[in-house]
Length: 315
Ligand SMILES: Nc1ncnc2c1ncn2[C@@H]1O[C@H](COP(=O)(O)OP(=O)(O)OP(=O)(O)O)[C@@H](O)[C@H]1O
Image (cartoon, rainbow, N blue to C red):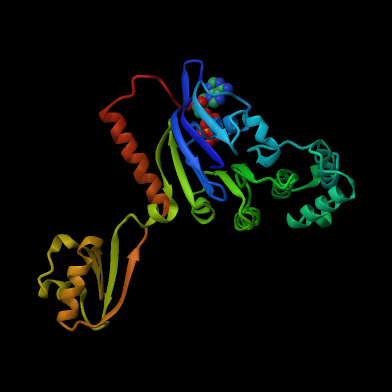
């Protein structure tokens, strides 16, 4: 059973379509990054998963439950703007919420102290939350999400607006949770963060999923190989001399050249037969940022070619 499964999920707010025909499976133990511009529908999807709002049409299952609220005890949720009571201490905050979630008694308190340590707040645990930095508050929000040791974590922009050090601390925490095998849904605008923390991604654009797949497949889909030959040789001259078809060569620089993946075997054969010394051969990846920009440009071009009949839009 998948952690999250939806089929043709649609959500309309009156006349506005926030999410349209979304079909998606997030397997257990997978870390999934949900990307998309402002107003793309990410928070709407999260609200549907949490059962705060209901689909207009389509099916949704969270941890096997179609009534998603029934899965709540196994979900940890970090809202994009967590609000705290500023006068109580971090520890008391967790103790109160722990009681609501059935985490209590000496075992519960031990668990809370371990969580405070895990998010590196043990030294400030008795201080009022109002005196915490934004990064510390965000770590407290993550501790709160972990109170019930949930199987699924939904993290809505957990590093948004934090300084680089605080972002790094949160990412370290998420990486640890991922390694423990938690299922993670991470909404984020930070593409390098998603590339580092997620196994699979989906890009939403005006309520549509325009691209999804494994990060490793998407970044390696460029199909370009960089070949480096002996230092004293000029790559372009060598390739011309060996009569390599020019359309196979994307770029040359000194003793390196970038060639199309499909021409790699033919070029290597020519180089080897001509006894050209090879120093390295490396497939070139593109960044997730490049994948994102390309996908959104293609979606825009398709939208211009075929305008959508129903209004949907940004904030
Ligand atoms: N309660 C609401 N009533 C009407 N329209 C809404 C409501 N909530 C969201 N929308 C609209 O639905 C669309 C999707 O919004 P949503 O908040 O899901 O986007 P998002 O991808 O989370 O954006 P952001 O990155 O800014 O958080 C937007 O056009 C938004 O204006």
